[in-house]
Image (cartoon, rainbow, N blue to C red; front, side, top):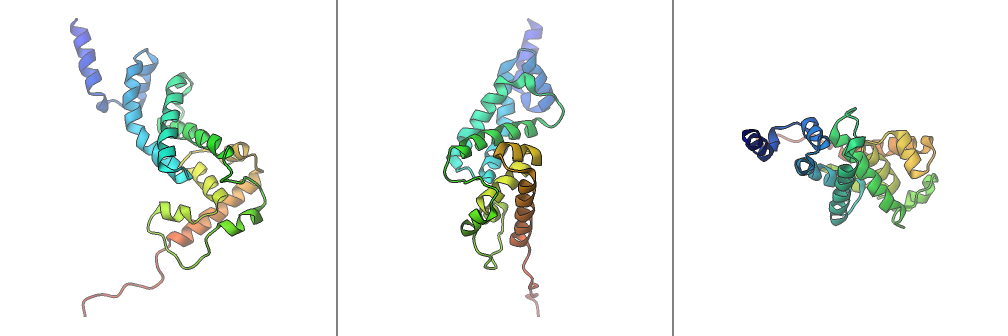
Length: 195
């Protein structure tokens, strides 16, 4: 019984365990430990999904779905990268599943199809990444967020979006150039307030 008390005590303070330790406990049959992994990573998943373009309530739902999938497929995690990256890939694929069913995105390799949707370059300077991402064309935002927030390779993005690899790379290049311009500091130096 003394061993059992130590296990209960260890379970009550799971915050001191690494993700790897928690995954191994889950794989060893201690599935309730997954709640700590979900607590650690749900916020990151929601943020990644919002950066991809999901509405806040949809991001919450898709983050939960991704965590449930991860729980069911935990034995597929190969410890070949951060657990958070694996979760983000699952969440990105959940997002893509919803995007495919939505008329909001028209996935085509014709860049002219998106010209009217992009905001004009009016000298706007974003103060945060969310505002800057909102200034991108939908397909550019999707590609850049799948690459960085979703941790998908360029080839994975091309496969998921059913676009040629070169088209995905072009969207990424344009998106990154536009983000640099949007997030760049103002050209005019600030004046000293002391005379």
